[in-house]
Amino acid sequence: MGIFGIARYAVLVFVAAVILVPILFAALGGAKTNGQLLNDPVGLPSPWVFSNYTDVLFGANAAVFWGELLNSVIIATVAVFLTVSLAALAAFVFARMVFKGREAMYMLFTLGLLFPSAVAILPLYILVRQLGLESNYLGVALPQAAFGLPLTIIILRPFFKSIPVELEDAAKIDGCGTFGFFWRVLLPLARPALATVSILAIVSTWNAFMLPLIILNGADQWTLPLGVMNFSSEYTNDQARTLAFTVMAILPAVLFYIVAERQIVSGLTAGGVKG
Image 1 (cartoon, rainbow, N blue to C red):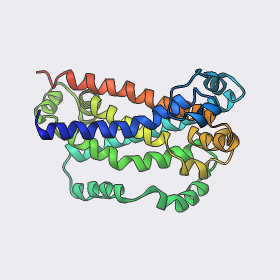
Image 2: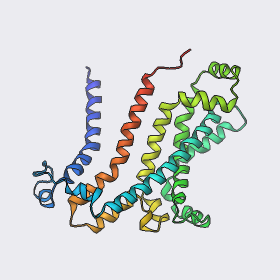
Image 3: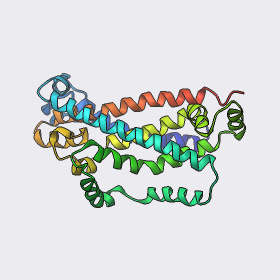
Image 4: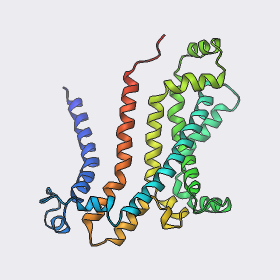
């Protein structure tokens, strides 16, 4: 292994450590008492205190946690479905159809990546309020889907464009129209790309904080990021329980990533188009 290979692996290890160490610290901290956190913050729990986790899942805070989890799942499901389905249709048009102004429209979506969502919070709130979607899950899911469209289209377009034209011609000979080719041929071949954009969309929606904070007024509608904020404020002196709540809040997104990553790997290793 050359010097560049060693440097590359060193960078990868460093990046992995930056990502994993805080998660590991939080997971171990949730299995400690507050005294253990104060006296030995980086050591292993001794003894292990799993009551912090069981309290979040089944104790006095269980109803709050499961309610916020359900809210996050509903918003993420709607946002990801809209993002991936609409972006797939748009990317198909930009990749497989030729029409006047195509590149200009595609450039418009590309410029959406340069537009920070925080800048649009005030006008977005006014628009959501005028539409009557304040304190409504759709008031969060629809903007999240809109902000996720540019990146999703940019990722899907090259993949759709790489599908051979001969495959489309063969599908038309077999009786598939334009939408039939998209639905029956292109989407099954695009499963790795769809899994990738789904990961990005669900992580972005799951971690959203500012938009749900402004749109969702009732505590019964809060998502898990808002729940973590409220929980940490309510249990300021109980850092161990706060860490346990935080770990349980990020665990669903991590599990989804693991499942989706396996789908990506299986899709990439399954081979290309079989003739």
